[in-house]
Amino acid sequence: SAVISQKPSRDICQRGTSLTIQCQVDSQVTMMFWYRQQPGQSLTLIATANQGSEATYESGFVIDKFPISRPNLTFSTLTVSNMSPEDSSIYLCSVEYQGRPSRVLSYNEQFFGPGTRLTVL
Amino acid sequence: QQQVKQSPQSLIVQKGGISIINCAYENTAFDYFPWYQQFPGKGPALLIAIRPDVSEKKEGRFTISFNKSAKQFSLHIMDSQPGDSATYFCAARKYNFNKFYFGSGTKLNVKP
Image (cartoon, rainbow over all chains, first blue to last red; front, side):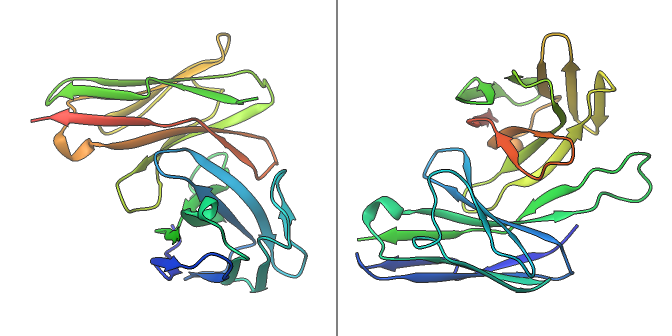
């Protein structure tokens, strides 16, 4: 499986500011994803980031609020812009990784980073 | 509309007991069903997954049971241990699509 790291692990920010979250993978992956997980809740996909193309955003998420960069196959950033307390959440990076070649039928599996816990005051 | 419905929301099991978490889906185009385990302060970790061409998959103490006709699948944790205490998420995905639909999560507490 891929080893995924995120920076920062947590941050406390003031309303109206922006925070950029970094996601680093130890191997080249085609698909990277950004999720949001509010406390005690499930995971909500924000956007899919492919290297060399614009990120694809899910309904309810827009590029102006959550700009994403994907400069290469091992790195991506998510910026949470003009933050409000409603943006307080855990933000998770995820990558798609090909299943083990020994499997008869391999399905791409998603692996998650440790998350960034954001608190907006 | 929630694509994958998960129950129960929380579960308390005695050490050595069996933990059972259930998920149901509507979309028959789903063909990959993983379960994730998440500890506090950590990202979800892939635990076990199944495709609908089999009715059961077992890995150690963890078993997925799959009922294609009922559009339901469940996670069974045998001989549950306090270290299994975590939140478990089921998910589903359509073939050749990258988007996962996650259940609402089940918080499992295994009492020593």
